[in-house]
Length: 359
Image 1 (cartoon, one colour):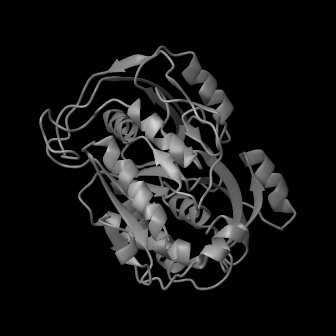
Image 2 (cartoon, one colour):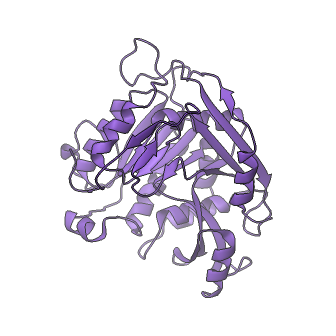
């Protein structure tokens, strides 16, 4: 069976919502969140965004390069990598992104090595232009733990074929079948040797993904990851290289997050009852969305952001199926949904995302 998300989403839609009881972090954080960034003003804004949610159970760090101007970032927790990456404002205005840069992949690889030694059982990666609902991120991680998903890789998945010699991603597809077809144009095949183009491989899109720490530790100690992390030059999609690194490991559970909870483009209306992540949300709408979120993860009377304490109950449902694909050994596919209540909580957002105009 292929990576058929439509079939498994249909399975999940037929299931009733189950009420997940409150839980406690026990005085320790549950998720380590690494936020990839290059611009100090975006770090300042994102730091305010996370602080305003006032939740425990999540420890976040901003992953930056060695030449990042920390003095302009304010009191934000930084993970300064060895990568000598400089991205100018003029580059961002022309491209509005830092994707496809070798420095971005090296920073992500550095964060994954850092996460492998961290105490948190779950690891998330996000961009600095993404609104992340920390209370719902905690719920997703907690449900993964309850379901016993020890080697989980979660997000919204797309597909690429891969040339290991250059870390080049070719033959894109929104699904497995399309990527097989487009990969053939580049001579890619599932049984290709490492120096040729192989695939396709699923990858969780970079704006937000979530992994179990057990899988992260296994991945960073593997030979493919170490080879990719030492590469230099070229056009590199960091989320694709991470996805290939995961695919080289056995017995991975690919957990699909629904797109109605994970938005990759600016929306007019967000349902905050189920909103996990919103990419390129208008800056002035962040506070309105955050104000609708329930408090979670900190004991009553504790300082803002204190770890531990009970979370609010939520609702969830999930479905799983085994997968049999040439490039994925003993893998399985699951869909998981979580939400705070069964009644939608719409938040209307006007305007558009403006990357350089941050309040």
